[in-house]
Image (cartoon, rainbow, N blue to C red; front, side):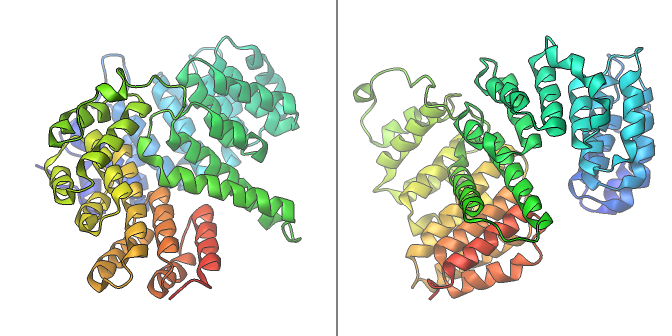
Length: 458
């Protein structure tokens, strides 16, 4: 078995005979942003060893995505050459990579690609790319897509025109799609609004029936744009602008703290669990299977009731809930257990929270678990001020969480947890992380936590 745990092993594995290992190594290099791998990943854009029955090339697509994650503009010519292939999914991966690299030298070739009539193009992704580069001189070429039969394409075209003209009608066209009965169209509209990043769409995004993770992404994009606007102006932020910005941060705080639903929609109109609450089993240990069944439901409201049931079952049996966490492998159930633990705030759950944060992120569900666990550490730290051993463990884990993970949401959670603790040690961790934090939104939130905690530190 090939172990991929370093830049060298991952780069070497791109030549492995097993296609799955080649694919995984390309993913690993992108995830860890290994710049020295760019030449080898560029070679992978032409790799013909692994081809699907439909004629696509999975390794090429992953190589394009990884090059976008690394963000080295030297690979742009090679990426643009992939648009000459017949693999449309590779075309889309390339366009997303070009958005991530964000170098407008590719505008000319992209317009040439738009004009080509002989291929099936990923129009939605192409318009999004041209929107990112503000290629407003091609408005006449994009205008027909405003009336597309595809709501997603029409939404991306409306976003393009709003960026270019600022006309509110185009923005309203996108916001309207947040109420569409197709969840994928709602989500696509939210991503378009994140690309537009105007504060006037914030309320609509927050009220939409879309997953919390997408709301987080969109609100963060708006805050990033506000930060950019502020840095472009020499004058100080007005009181109104400051209030709007503070309100958005407060809403983002709430999403981060309660993001146990992850990729589930958050509408209050969801179908409630079947049966009346009084018909549920009594809250004894035997009720645990019922709670677990609720936690496996796709409905957010069902999962919330499952968490409430766990809290009632184990409010006087903390050891039992901790044992359940360490014996359970189902991620949905582990998420529910962690959320129940965070509601109960018992110091005996510290090992479970530390375990949930872990050292590596495997998927979005685990990312959500980690954020909830990080916030729970802050809650316990705020009430365990005299327990030196517990506080030492909390500080050690939050220090790692604030500085190491690639997940901005997890670092943001660590900031919220340390702000909640409001101790000298917590403040010092925030001070040391502030200047090295690469994300402007997280850096701003750290500054806010420091400003808030100055008068409260012990």
